[in-house]
Length: 272
Image 1 (cartoon, helix red, strand yellow):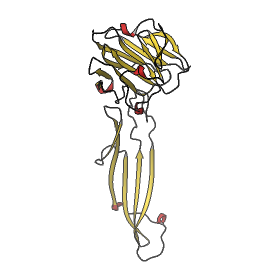
Image 2 (cartoon, one colour):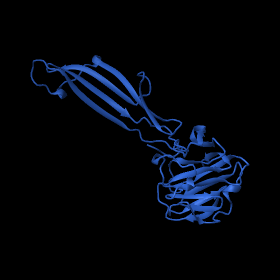
Image 3 (cartoon, one colour):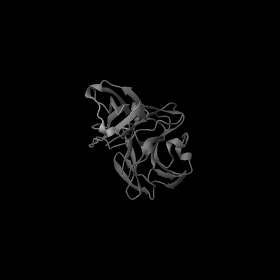
Image 4 (tube, one colour):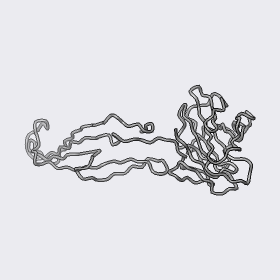
């Protein structure tokens, strides 16, 4: 379950349930459970909580733990022992409450933890660093881009050994499809990428000189971004300036791509 940044779940879900279990059978007539009520002083209580949270890789982690009865509970069960018509019964009553009630769920974009061999993630997955200058380092976003959502990256560090740096775009490739190539533009299907001023689609330069500002000319602190519009058009942004439509008929559910290409050695995802 996910929600936009800063939003909360306003609905508290509570499910009440009751179960009666037959323990042993003794002599006597058939009894209707609804005609019997347990004594108040035979109640016993226990509780457990299922907790979910995001780890640094962005995955959901689940575990179970016990809590004291005066803690805030996600699940509370009451056990009651009683006899009914000569039979020993257990009545279990419980309330399941929404464990996310009142919690702010953070679904901001970060880099997916499945990166290539020349990159590493820091800053809880918001920053990518290149391990070796001689090589490239593509990374994907942790989830697909939403329509109208800007995927924006700030270049933090840059070397001075080459004249090119930075690649950004979108892809239909999923992180779980396998390891990333060293250079994202080597893929021949499902890629729309901006390198320098040129738009590359499936390893072909289809729009030379598309961008007024080359990604190769950017300095540390400069920003680049990409967005799929509600009409399916692809737009690239340099320091917040829309460079215009670059491609059309982009499918929904594409992932954002950033590549520590050339001299780029560190970059961070930004959020509005």
